[in-house]
Structure formats: structure tokens, C-alpha cells
View (tube, rainbow, N blue to C red):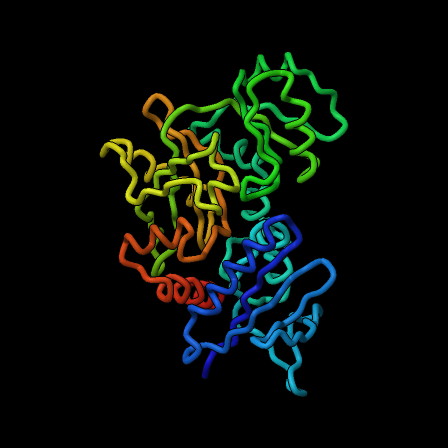
Amino acid sequence: MKKNIAIIMGGYSSEYLISLKSGNVVYDTLSKERYNVYCIHIFKDKWVYVTEDSTEYPVNKADFSIEVAGSKINFDCVFNAIHGSPGEDGLMQAYLELLSIPHTSCGMYQAALTFNKRDCLSALKPYGILTANSYFLNVGDAIDPSAIEKAVGFPCFVKANKAGSSFGVSKVYSKTELPKAIETAFEEDDELIIESFLNGTEVSVGVFRYKKEVTVLPITEIVTDNDFFDYEAKYLGKSQEITPARLSSSQEKDVRKVGKKIYEVIKLDGFSRSEFIFKDGKPHFLEVNTIPGLTKESILPQQAAQAGISLPDLFDNAIQQALQKNS
């Protein structure tokens, strides 16, 4: 009997369009002979099942079911393709776990922790994970440019604490640029993190559980045409993503080890993509994404392809892992 799979996409953040693209790729890729697949759009004003002809059916939030042509449909598994809130910050994970519905992402606590850049860095530092110097700021706090300069120096990065796809991120070269950068970050979140600039090779490390084994995919090197790996670089072709990365054997060994360690220390499940910059030959951790982009052009699918894992296999494995975890 075919399993009913809900692909949740959209979300409440600036990343909703990217999420819709990822979700539709998952829908197009999953075997319709093996699964009954449903596109579920999650927005603040509506949760709906959207058919191929754009007909919408409301989701019953009491049990995450839909009713089509008089028949109620419950889901055996949820494929989570929501970047940002509520799919990457623990809200959907908690909701689905309360309903005992298997899902392809990590647990509620792990999602909330990794989505909060400041908390994630704090949790990993005791394990010897190297990071940039940082300075925290909340809405309403007094802004002290001299204290910021002393803590992180210039240039530095001002980032929204809980946002993805480089929304709310600015590279700042002087005190005079700080107010505008801070204002931009606060448009995305009421907390921000300011980090020192790390000048070195940037890489992305994909880790997931493949056939029950924690697997590190081939490393991707990020070479951006812009000042940093911003939204344009990520999604509008203003970067090169080189897989496998041009690293020495010792560098590759180190970053693979750290990427796997982060996955295991935080006790992640599903997909993850951790970002690092090499400083003085050592990988320094930036952040981890637990719902990375899933289009053919996205980094993690590129890495999987390099490892000989096709998109259908990648997505099918995610569903099977979720079902087995909850069996």
C-alpha cells in the first residue's frame, strides 16, 4: 500500500519563495508509483493542500489531515522543505511530534538550537569547535560602536540571529556603517550577532543519515563574485560552487571530522549543511542549516550527486529514515 507523503513548503519568513522551489523539486522527484504525494503550503494566513491545477483544500490543524472529494486523508510522513520559520526553528517539528507524525527533519530542540546562531555557537564551543569572535545585540540595547570594534574588529559581519539565505546580513568596514547594518538585521529578527571577518577558504559540509549511517558528503568550496556569500551569490549565479573543494588532504580530513562531530554532538537527524571558513589552516564554524536547499542546483544535492546519490535516492532515503525512526 502506497504511503501518503505531505511535502510542507512556504513558511513565514523571507525564505518562502526558495522553500516553494525546494518543495516542488521534491514533489517532481518522488516516485508517484511508490508514494501518494501532496504539496502542502504553510503560510500564516492559511495551511492548504495545493493540487497541480492550483485548487486548494484546507488542512485540518487538529490532526494535520485534508479532505478531498469527501474522503479524509491522513499522512504517513511529512517531508519538511520549509526554510526558516516554522519549518527550521522547531515549531513544525514540535507540532508533528505531538501528533506522532514522522517527518524528515531533525527534532524540535535541535531545530530550535541550530536556528538560533548565538545559542548554537555557545552549545558547540565546549566541544572545541573553532568559531569567529562574536558580539550579541538585541532590539533596545544601547549600541556601542567602540565596544563592537574592540570585540570583533573591522571588517565584520552583522547578521540577523534567526534567519537564513543571508537575509539581514551585511559586511561592515567601519563604525559609520554599523547603524544601517544593524537596522537591516533588525528587520529580520529582534536579535543579532556581529562576528569578526575570517579571511580564508569558505566551504560547505553536507551531513545526513544515509541508510542508517551518518554520512559526510563531498565538500563544496564557495567562491563568490560578491563581497561575501550573500543572497545574490547563493541564488542568482554570483558564485562558483566547486565540488569537491580544492583542499589539502589534511584540511579535508579536519573539516569532515568537525562536520560529522557537529551532527553527532547536537544529535541531528535528516539533512544538515554546515558552513566553515579556514583560518590559519583550521576550519572555523559559521552555522548549520537543517533544511538546506533541495533543488538540483543547491549545494547538498550537488554533493550527493558527486557521491553517486541521485535526487530520487536522496529524497526516498529521507522518508525511509523518518519512517524507520518512528517504527
